Image 1 (cartoon, rainbow, N blue to C red):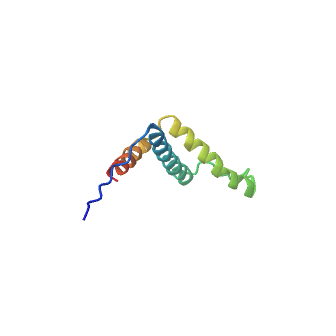
Image 2: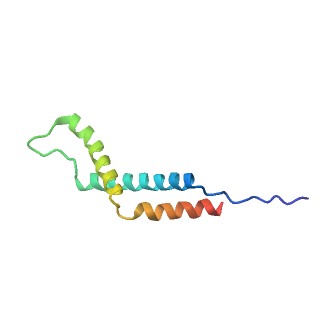
Image 3: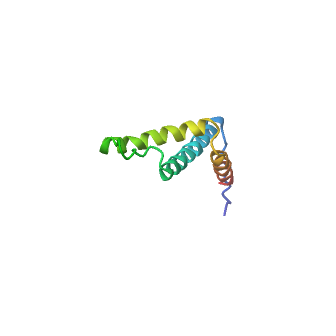
Length: 91
């Protein structure tokens, strides 16, 4: 019986970029949830904009989180990127 040998995947610059983008999206999602938990984007008591303002607050938090990631973030994306890359190399 012949043994089947599989080659590890070749990590290309495009694959690295895709892994880094995925890691940055995960960090941005995490930061957006942290901003939500801290009350960023909540309507002030006296001047609430109603339901519309509450719905658009999530877009504001997401944009702020993405800007934080572009500015260096909290290092989560870098850790996630390396973990994803190791997982990719292990397969």
